[in-house]
Image 1 (tube, helix red, strand yellow):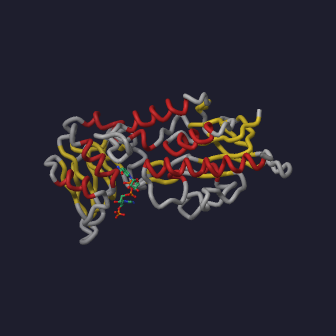
Image 2: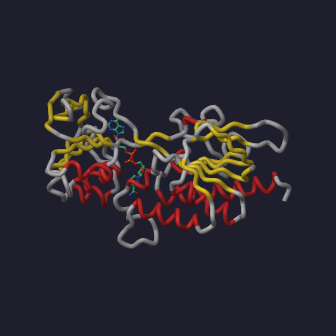
Image 3: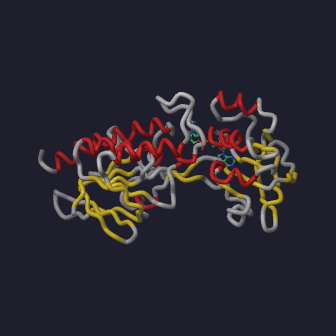
Length: 311
Ligand code: NAP
């Protein structure tokens, strides 16, 4: 069996790409890593996706997208893609996608593999994962009822996580390395108005302390260099994302931060491979722009497949 296209990733970008290729009647397979859900799925409430007054939860949005894609009768294979390679046979070159040690042949590939949370890389972080360190407030927040929790970061995600955690926790402290938040103004306003949330400005987290679970953090004031310890039972790391592109690094050009380099048509450096969403070198990382990316990559892909088939 040779697919027309294999889409790697089933977040907003991959699923929108799927809608477009399926409506163009391409034979498609979507492969989704069962262990890495789309970042969008972790959003408690998404208020800036059009057509949902009052917002929609990330899980519901992904569910609706999957339902919409499912209407066209496509298979979503739960598997971990470890590589893509060009068969290099002739002008009608095929791509081979390896997932869970099985090879799948396809004329084209759309990479929509998204991004995964960035780590702080400080002492104790790895050791305390699942024992106080978390990268997802929506997943783990309820475990910290009436506890003191800290969020590292100052962007939209950190602030949204803080607002979410303030429903459960006794106190939420946002530890940010500067004196201004990067988050959208409307989110900042909500945080400043929330008396369960404090902001620790100009500070970095140097070390995580504890026994079985976290008991505190060592902070550094970046303006004075002074160290101080802070009592807390949970640390939510929300300092941005890194692209999930390790499996294509030998096949495609990627930039120094790991993002796939794309051209105007979301084509990559390899013929027949397209990229969309948070895994590519895009300036804007919004769910709605990821959907737009998916549509664009799919349009280019359909054109490529039609040309390869001689239509
Ligand atoms: P982000 O916008 O890149 O913000 C990361 C934050 O973490 C920044 O405040 C940054 O500090 C801080 N940071 C980065 N590395 C750090 C380190 N090593 N130690 C301490 N602090 C560090 O990441 P994000 O909040 O995850 O958002 C990612 C993208 O998704 C953004 O484009 C965002 O707009 C989008 N997003 C949108 C929504 C929404 O529209 N509802 C929700 C979530 C995310 P500096 O400020 O000093 O750089």
